[in-house]
Length: 531
Ligand SMILES: Nc1ncnc2c1ncn2[C@@H]1O[C@H](COP(=O)(O)OP(=O)(O)OP(=O)(O)O)[C@@H](O)[C@H]1O
Image (cartoon, rainbow, N blue to C red):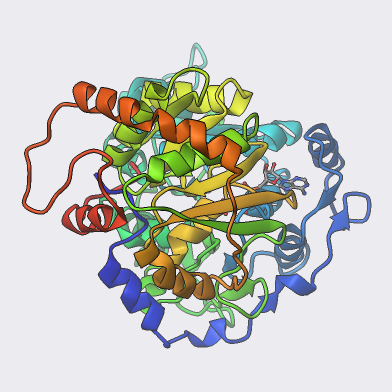
């Protein structure tokens, strides 16, 4: 299974699209915004300040300051906000903080903010950020992600109030109206969100005020059961001015409430439901494709980006390349990993299959060489969670991964990213490389290349705005011993791996060069990260 960022056709189409929507032509340039200490940040709730300090945060990053100024204070959240900001620049807190601050004054608990992410692990990571700040102002956060128990979700999300003794209730009203949300903020993946929309009694988006579409370009690439049009429809005003799911009788004694969205006649809002659903869309590689952006139904959108170029790598990222002899790429990888011994490294391959084999092969080099673990969409969730936990703790130093880990994942102290397989698309390079050099830290991104890939890689580097990518020389004293044990390790791999039905022109195992991988990539136009 291939987990590349997107298929070539769509990527190529986007690369050549010169149609930039008018509101993207006059962006707020975040590179002109300064960080701001929590002391001087206007209007910050004192309890949120305390919570941030507990997280070790003393100032906000530029993108966070820019979004804060747009969303907090008079006129806040009047416009939808689209953010294109480098990996590791702090986009999660840039939306989490203003949403939590704004909801801190809410009187009744109901679901008001929905954050959607493409994968389970990402959603849980973002929930962790909300969990660190929202309870300080009395807000509750829930998650609805794939591969967790639906019953558990429901218990967490839906509150069924206790009825006062002695009052006579209509059973129908009780069953229909008295269940309400136990959370103010929900972090979800699209598939599980649709499960709740379609099947969970009492789950409603009636009161939703904020919708965050994180990793926007990834989420807009697939329809994921039409989650976005469904959410937008469920938050529209109906013809009679009332929200469609509102029922005429809701006994206020139980704390239920209705949000009435009317067709507004105010300037700038004419014909739109009010109160309005405010939207935030974010990515390090935000799409500029009008046919994708239109799906968001943005209101008077404000575009925030960093610098003049479309893509931008983290400031302290150093890019390096290794030119590998054909047929012995794993030797270069092991030599490089030996040179980086003790540091946390993520090694990216282009498919689940290569991830599995490469991980096995590295472990066949023997304990004195490299201990590596695997992370890919081919593993079950429990194993993936276990490996990522061990990697976060530092018990594992080398993680071999497919692109399932390329987007958004924030693992502390990853100092090196290694592209074992050269990424095919600029977006893939940006997201993979962005697993290091986060939050202003240093990091290195190495790319292993065959001779025939050098030119294509140079053109890719130009597209990501990086001209300099010197060759990294592996110290010869590290290289020679690795080479000596390569053949026995490869033989062990061949014994252990089940033979794959041979396809014409396809080489099995690691007697391949990157051309083989590329042809596999083209054959397997499969999906990737699981929703
Ligand atoms: N103001 C801050 N001060 C210090 N650290 C911060 C601050 N804001 C965020 N961070 C840290 O920076 C790291 C990157 O943040 P985050 O994951 O939000 O980046 P991102 O822009 O969403 O990246 P990606 O595009 O890869 O998803 C996290 O470890 C986070 O805890």
